[in-house]
Structure formats: C-alpha cells, structure tokens
Image (cartoon, rainbow, N blue to C red; front, side):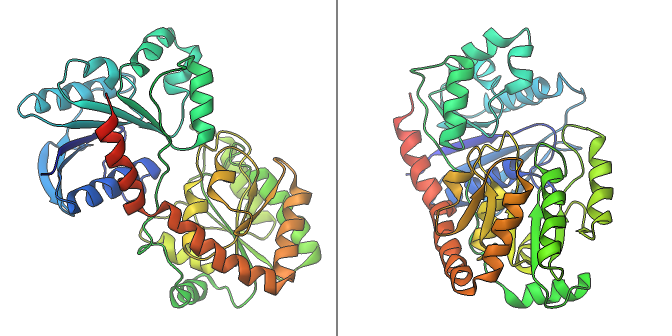
Length: 373
C-alpha cells in the first residue's frame, strides 16, 4: 500500500512556473514518479489564488500568500500546516524550508529536508542562527544535493551526527535527450550554420563565472575564429546590477545572449551546442545544467569546484581551475580538435547521465523515507 507524501517548496514561485529553477523541477519530477508508483502525493505551491488541481498524477494545492519577504515563507508554511491538520500524511518533504523543522515539529509524520544551498536565510549573519541550527536537528533526515553540499552544511552549522544522506538532483532522460533535428532547427532560428558552438546555461553573474567565460571565448576565437558562443539564462545573482554589464560584454565579444529560457525550450538549446561550458566560481552545490547537457549527449568543460566533479565523470567532461580563462579556452579547443576523443565523450556523457534518472533517485528516496526517524 502506498504512502501519503506532501512536498513543500519555496514560496517565491508557483510549482509550474516555466522559468522556475532546479527546486521547482525537482519537486514536480519526484511527485510524478512517486505518484506513478501508487503513492498519494500532495504538492503545495505558492499561487495567485488558492485552489486545487491535478497534474501528472499528483495534486497541487495552491496557497495564496498576502505577506512579502521575510514573512512570506512563514505564512506559506502556516497555511500548509493548517491544511495538513485536516488529514494524516506519512511524510512531509521540505525543499529548502529549514523553518519547517520548527513549525511542523508536532506533526505526526516523518519529515525530511532537501536543500541546494546550506547558508539558509543569510546563514551566520542572521540573529536566528542558533534557531536554524536547532531546526536542522528536528528533521528525520537531511538531504543535501551533493557530498560537497553535505560537508559544507555539517561544518557550517556544526550538526555532526544529524542524520543526513546525499540525494542528487535528477534529470528527465526523456525530456533531455540527443535530438539533432531539434538542434538544427534551433540553429536555423538563431542564424547559426554548421560552425562549432560552445554553450552556457545559467545565471549571468560573476558567481557563475560569466566574466571567465567571456575572457575564455576571446581566447578561443584567436585559435578557432569560427566557434560561436551562445549563453542562456537570467541576468543577475541576488539582484546584482553588475549582470547587465556582463550581458553587454557577451554581445561585445560576438556572443549570442538568449536571456532566460523556459524549461520546455531547454532541450533544443542544449542540442544546439557541441560543447557545454560551466565556469562557476563558487557555491555550485550540484550543477543541474551540466547534468542536463550530458543527458543531451554533450561533453562538459567545467571548473573542478563544488558538486561538479560528482556530476561529471572523467570520461564525459574536462575540468579547469576556477577563474582561469586560458585553461578553459585550452580545454575547449583541445576537445574540438580531437574528434575521436570528442565522440567518445559524447557517448560517455549520455551514459553518465543515467545515474541521475528520476527513477533511480526515487528508489533511493523510498529507502530514506523508510529509515527516517
């Protein structure tokens, strides 16, 4: 007999928002796979109006919040808590909502917390540091998205001994797959011929290494003038205005900037490229874009930082030091020049991505639910 599982994610965006990030996608994919296995799944979502709807086998319960930050998350969770008091659930799965460990403490269900970033709510800079540290200990299991994230969170919050398991983000291998026809069609729409393309997908900001990317592309073009740079993603990191300058610089060096791309268009964008690049400077807890690019059969050139070495295998990608545009350019050029090596990495990228298929992630999650206190 299946379980009743409730998912609570961030209160900033609706769960079906097409430009949502990795968290919204993770919740939907987990819920869909869990429902497919016979579980009753409820997903709470921040919406403009309250209501209920069915989506891919699970139920979305919209919550309308009237308050703004920093109280919006608390209102969202309190309304969800009030709703959950109406019926029993077996598991409440929180996503980056560490406050749930306190607010739902008396709910008679197993409680787990997934998170993509461990410095919750300004981390040690908040006067509530000790409350958050205590809240983390109230979950039956903590689920960071990588070993890197796990080590960082344990050291940062001093929570050694708290039950924790790495639960990687997953990839929908049917949605993200090699599709040469879609890639060619998108190339025609973008005005790109058969020249090699290096692609970046993610926020345009210094934290993600966009400045390194721009410098590296200039070096690549000195050796391979035909190579095109395509960048897609929102401009900005936590509202920083410096990203507007970075967008201008991408265009100044001859790059094509697409802006934010909805997730339904992403597979075709990945299939445009020959090489996917990810020059993150800091705080890369997993690397969802790198996993998706591999699923589309694209070799990845990325920094040896954060969770990226856990996502990219030595046979599916190449690494370079953080902030080193010369090394990034050299890796891209060497990969494009060695066709045997390149096609070997194409095959390895697709194979490596199978580790992150959602069915495997949910297999692991079922065991975690059973073992959680």
